[in-house]
Image 1 (cartoon, rainbow, N blue to C red):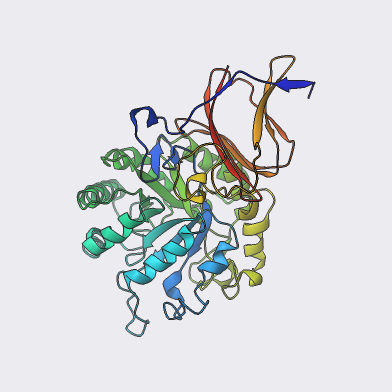
Image 2: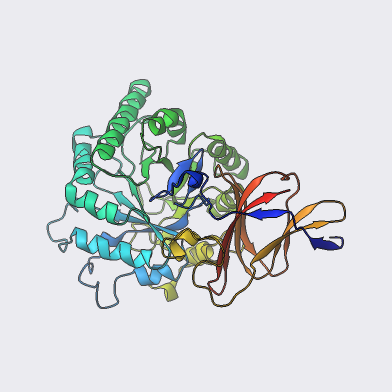
Length: 437
């Protein structure tokens, strides 16, 4: 880079939400186009872990003795955790649990800046629409609504894990209409019940039918009067794509081109079939592409899985990461430790203040915009940390971990309105709305 001088014609505003000029700040995460935004309007890319909390039969008895696993998961640095929950676990000797136990787990993640995605597992891989009605009844129960709304700034709802058949049905044309209309009705019922948080819809056929999800997605998301519906595919479909890099990239490019947000709600290294671990999956190639394309993903699973090879931890402790878990956490190209960027909104105790927000340890600038003699502009990172740059419509331009004095070109962005967010290694945070002149 040639000699640089500070670019003085940068304007900083007092808010980050594009609607804030009208005094509006969202109380929940929300959707803009195919991006997820936090309540302050900053782009949020979920990078996290699936936590099968009720498959730990020591729960909830271990809530207060240090045995509950959220403290171990927090050390892996996810920015989101998908908590699997049951209305009815289905086994009478399963220890009793309650909504207050779920509340405690959500609160523990909340204190560490982690979004909780609650998913109901009762109808996993089922095509029984009568049984599915129990999921709708669960979410519209006043006690559940009250719990979710209490945490509306840090919670999303995954309505039903992997429900419905489309391509697995004898008549896929009819089946997709049934599946789509069922979810549209459910979305409307949940909104009438008073739920304001983002809703997540899994792909049919055990979460694997990405094509069906993309085909019906516009109608499903368009039915949400609050425009906060997110779709989710489970990346075992990589087997259907041939499990090679070219096919995987084509699938991810389909997701990136969608009009609505799509997350990979489950990504794993193995798929189960007749045996616990039947097919290995090229998950590292998949996650490298997800990082490149800013596609959200959640790793399956922390522990207690039918296929032991896809457990991130051998026994639930962070100190006992499996080889797979170590890659998910520490891989330099996509691992959670460096690439799961938490939203400053949550780290700053649910505030949208802009400059020097959060756990500030010392007055400092996190970044500067500079220009060289040729007029090319760069974002200069002044201290090690995670940086994201997005447009106000939520489209993420830059997202990753950067070292002190590293420079990122901003060519072609003159007269663009950008949101720049920084989270330092020492907890310092800074978010600014920037207009390049």
